[in-house]
Amino acid sequence: MTKRVLITGAAGRIGSHLASALKDRYSIRVHYHNTVPEIPPVDDVHIADVADYDAIAPALVGMDAVVHMAADPSTRATWETVRDKNIIGAYNVLEAARVAGCQKVIFASTNHVMGMYDRDRQWPIYANQPPRPDSLYGVSKAFGETLGRFYHDQHGMSVICLRIGWFLTEPKDEIGLWMWLSPRDCAQVVWRAIESPIGYGVYYAISRNSRRHWDITETIERLGYKPEDDAEQYAAAILGHG
Amino acid sequence: MTKRVLITGAAGRIGSHLASALKDRYSIRVHYHNTVPEIPPVDDVHIADVADYDAIAPALVGMDAVVHMAADPSTRATWETVRDKNIIGAYNVLEAARVAGCQKVIFASTNHVMGMYDRDRQWPIYANQPPRPDSLYGVSKAFGETLGRFYHDQHGMSVICLRIGWFLTEPKDEIGLWMWLSPRDCAQVVWRAIESPIGYGVYYAISRNSRRHWDITETIERLGYKPEDDAEQYAAAILGHG
Image (tube, rainbow over all chains, first blue to last red; front, side):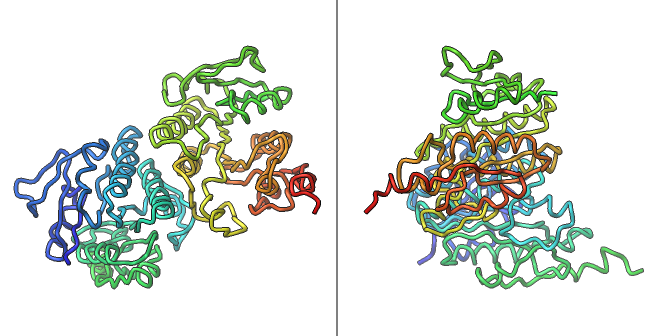
């Protein structure tokens, strides 16, 4: 039977791509906050502030899985924003999923949970190292990962945290050469996570970039991810030929 | 020169002990919320809700260090309580310390950050394993540890997180035999942390109990902690002789 999947934050760059890319595979419900597209990719639309439990909770009812993208993704976001949208928002979505019997949560995390290792060039980075966020945004996503661990351990839900790299149509600069996540690889890693029997895990989600500094061995071996793209095909154009 | 040290949550069992035990070593300011003792252990008293930034921030002014004990320590605390007292409270104290130029933060963390390993008898537990909290309380303390890491990395503050075991005058049961932290060992580990030049660390804080399951090697070797008590002296009385 077709799974029913809620995508929160579906107005975002990644959320809107996922809604379109996964709508043939799943029965999708999209969540928006303030920005609602004129023609949504699917008919099932829920509008709410994730920071408001009573507003967001009904969105989880009847869902088999939720892909929780809604958040302020800026490394310059203030504490107040991060607290409401990311920390309280993550709690509300996990708790509402539990109450609704939605047993699968894909939590959009980020490389910024570990950004200080990158700043110090302490490579490679493995997903299970102690967190070293580079921003309050990164701190908020580390919180969500740990909260997800608790919901798995305590309530038996499957929570898969994806540390999403740089989602772009194509990489544009040298940093993109190592942290790129292509649109089709993004869609794949999310559906692999939805289909995975794993109870809890944290995985880097980037394309199979030759210049990557983050370990995707577990993403490949445990989630079954088979990345198709490598940013290296853009290297000559980005770096020049001399 | 005598260091000026703020103890938040000084009405609590541990906070009140620390205020008395450390007042000859440091110039202590105590913070209370609703409960204020008739005769405080020191004259310098600040009353505020840690969830209210403007109320707590002045307490940090002029301090060399803060021992942040204020929190709801119940593993049954609700999300609303944990969010306000523990998560927002931790942010407020770290941020107010940064603004006030208070460069040293001792963050009262807890074994409950790792409580699911204990529940599964996955021993020994090392402080740097990925967190597996057993409660929203444990999640909130994991958050504080990660936020402290960020304040160290980003702002150069020294943040020492102590995963405090079971603070009691003496252990009362079998669990106490392995997780006990005696009053004098508690006072010692806190002043060792205050005096330590380490920029960031997470350490288990228990007495040198023969039956311990949590690693205190780093607490001893890096913080210089020299625990004096071992719960084993109470074992015969607790377990009986037959």
